[in-house]
Image 1: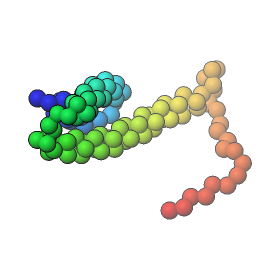
Image 2: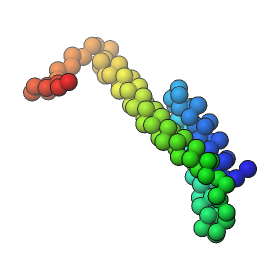
Image 3: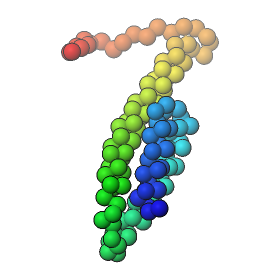
Image 4: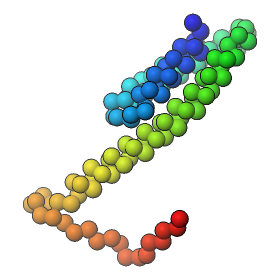
Length: 115
């Protein structure tokens, strides 16, 4: 099995993990992405050394497609993590240290929402 085929397998695993982007899944995906980085660099060394990679054209196409898909899933996971963080922050900021409810007053100004 070539380095690129192993990288494709890792990307497939990352894709499955990021369908439900929990913090644990994101951490595991990070470790797998580091493995993909090493595998791709090994493949690049082989290509630079003049190895025949003509038979791996289909694998390279699958790698590109999966890479794009994983990139989009990572962006979605980043947004999901941001939303979680903002939700937790908003819940914890509504009470003071003395357990009194705070009132949130937005800054002066207008808000324009365009659709």
